[in-house]
Length: 45
Image (tube, rainbow, N blue to C red; front, side, top):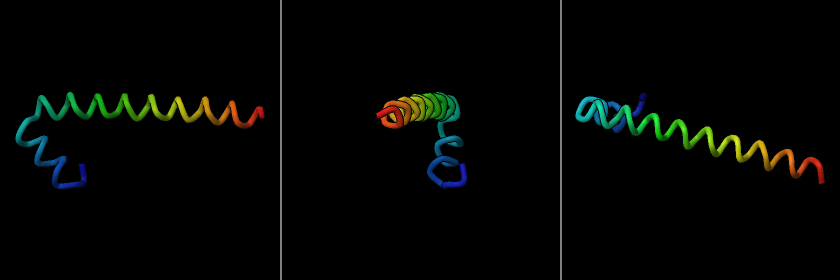
């Protein structure tokens, strides 16, 4: 939220911004979980 583009989005389209932020947070968590799995696989090798 420190960037102008995010603040502008929140002011202009608050409902859409909230939805996009939630989707982005979920995508980030999915990527993180995937990386943790890869770490486990490569540490076992």
